[in-house]
Length: 623
Image 1 (cartoon, helix red, strand yellow):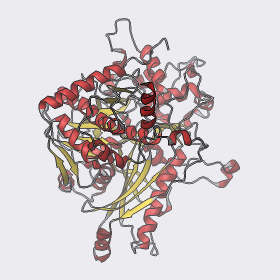
Image 2 (image 1 turned 90 degrees about the vertical axis):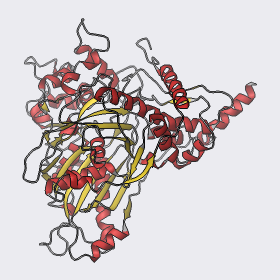
Image 3 (image 1 turned 60 degrees about the vertical axis):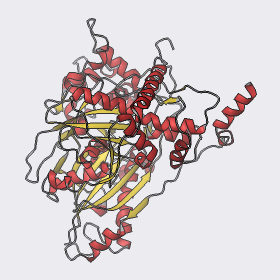
Image 4 (image 1 turned 45 degrees about the vertical axis):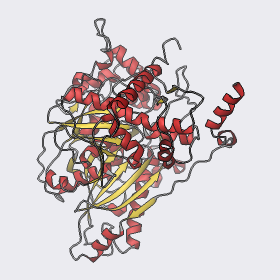
């Protein structure tokens, strides 16, 4: 009866939801530093101390700093979260749609989180007797840290003025949905009456390898130009125009690391400003995620910039057809591994150390997993889910909705650039964040660590599916009109079924991308190397192997993004001689072979595809 149904629904939704009505205060985040004592002891005992490479791993919800030894071991890790900003209203929201789906970061909070991790690492190791400051008590003593690499959340976009140091707006995060309407506008500006079905979103794909979608940095640049008055004023001012800077998080960190603090006199009312004089650079892996870079030339393409931003009302008053100044507003594109990117000045404890690598987070994970040969692939389970396969020195156009992107480009210690290496990628917006949603929004669980036991407490999903299309579906569907749904619900389902369905959704989405990758490349993958926090969940890893019908391999070190940036930086300064030496340091920790019967796998897969269809067409022009 209806009373028992209401009671069951009430049990599914944790009653803490109703009790938690107080105003939330700004969270205080603790930086956690972990030191590998055995490696530290060997360093302290050795008369010939190992060289170290630092790695900044700046993610969507936290920042990390890692120190890696010349033997590829992790000496220490530091991690701190930072505030996530989800505006409920904004003076810059000129549409009739609410701010639901907006996601922002404070760029200075990101910088603070990175600086905190670095300083706390140096302090903690000093307590244990290892002095890693750049000079120490003896100003002639070189630091053990020979280089620093950077890996970052991609597509998240920052805009600032390098003369004044003022930020124009918060960073717009990669999964922010406000730019879905911007993408539609750009499609309309670049379509023709003869366009094939679905052709509008692929109008720039032949040059960029990307569809026109809200995901990419170019759409965020366009939103900023369309909506931020001070930015519009400066872009159309002959004196300020050359001082406008757009960058993804890697560019912002390089600028802050290599720049100098401004004088107190420049800071009105204790206003915080960006540093000055920093290097304004990005690497090929990050540049390939803008919609602005030509994959063949590896340079910004003004025709692509104009196709994305040329239709903005910001330029309507300019009779000369002036648009975004590419040479000054976009960072210089450099190889991923390059000892000349810049020198640290923005953090005293690393003063004078070279910034020697930049890699987007998924490309860094590919590198950290030693996927150096065509056909080798990895899957990262983070906030989203990212599957990437090395395709060698030639880009492979995708016909299945995947992204053709740059994996990395190396420069050897003598400064000679090697050809870029390309990749196919499928990106899924919600993976770990689906579990975060169950914990923080629905409050069905208290911790992600509960999910494995809950999933294993029942024999199957009992034909219930959760499609986490909270901001649409990414690869291979690219359907911004989709929205999340749970289907197949019956009165017998419990909290455990919902949690299990949430975990299974990551595995199903990975298979969608996996199958598309095999079709595009004509290569049957022999194994899937995995990394990210969710690889600790043994249920998910076994289910992933079963759904793919392919062995899943977890490495000894799960911090593959940070390791990838460290390896690339070490190669640039000669810590490691070549890729084979780096490959020799990769070690497997656990392998999950598939065990699910074929009939069961087919039944599960059929149910998932049926559920995905239910998630489509929730947003329409009429709404």
